[in-house]
Image (spheres, helix red, strand yellow):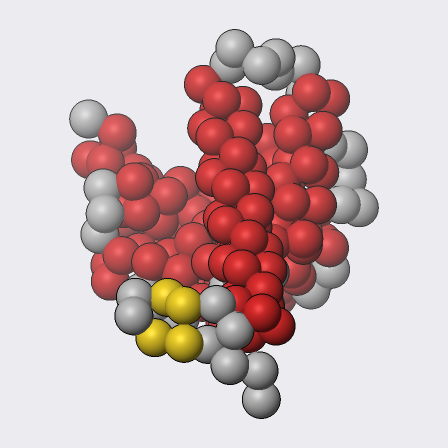
Length: 192
């Protein structure tokens, strides 16, 4: 299948046939790391993806959009490993690098990944703005509301908005309880 073909291409390069074609090698490694990520093999994908980022920086330059593409994949892997602050930083850099090029799917996915992290840390306003940018990107790319990737993005955005409203309502209710000395579960809430 696809994994076997990618591994064979990587072995051919390692054998010396690909010398002088580092950009192609980086693309093959990138594709392999994406495959591993989709299979849930985060530990295996991480070092390969980090190698791709470094190779692309060296071959294409640190500001190249393909560095951003690889960083976005690495950010997703890093997020799955629970390192959210590091992943958010990677997503931000990836978005900045990819925004220099015409709109593309990789940028839309990076925006969605960033929005997920913003929502997770309860920065609802930023998440909503980032989801909106992502949806605008999908529209520019010709994907309409019935497309599955747009529906997933809309669902995530709606969930973020719901959490934001619940958070605001809980805060307002708490303030009212304190202000008016209301009872809750047999306790009297008193203003300080």
